[in-house]
Length: 235
Image (cartoon, rainbow, N blue to C red; front, side, top):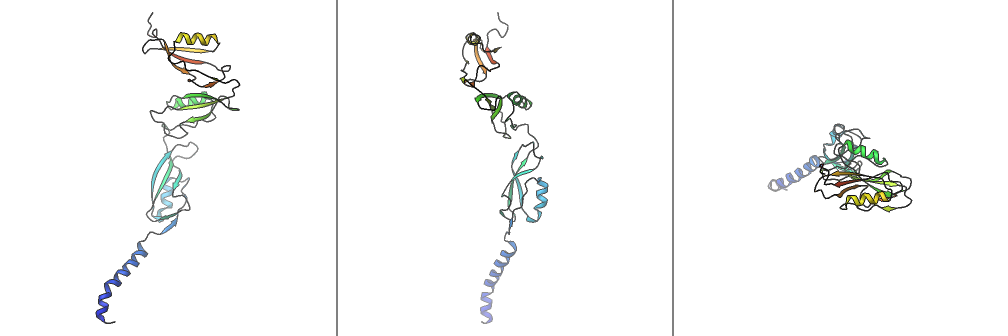
């Protein structure tokens, strides 16, 4: 091969050398992703310094059993292959729990109400038959650690050992005197609280809520609110 031919092919050889060199020096290498679970974000950044990866907080949760700032979930998971420059998404334990739903399962109804009062939320209760769970919470909405939005209405299902099931009817919209007379006739304890909106003497709220499943022989109190014309002190 003469010098003229070498000159012709020189750019081609240079291109090939550049491709192989770039592939060797600049191609992202694969590593096995370490576990960052139960580490704080600063600790994870120190451990992953040589991997040259970045972190992004995908979600925060509230869990009082874990240290604040702990990583509880990562994507990719530990053991999966990652490349240099890849982003690892994290779920960490947050510091502020004021807008998170607390865990109410297995609490008594009274204790569950007290917990919700501490975070400034009203809690509705529904009663369902459940063996060995008399008077305790067996389900809740929202789930524990979920965000409680302003429009959310949290409620729980209370398990009761019920022998004779009765569906509590809705008293809402009925004449307050007719309802209280009926409850007195059946010997059911009740409490009527007057409020003022339109003054038509009808029931506007009841607790237990309408259509709760109850054993009326064990019920402690039926609370009623009445839209009363006398609530402003009218004769």
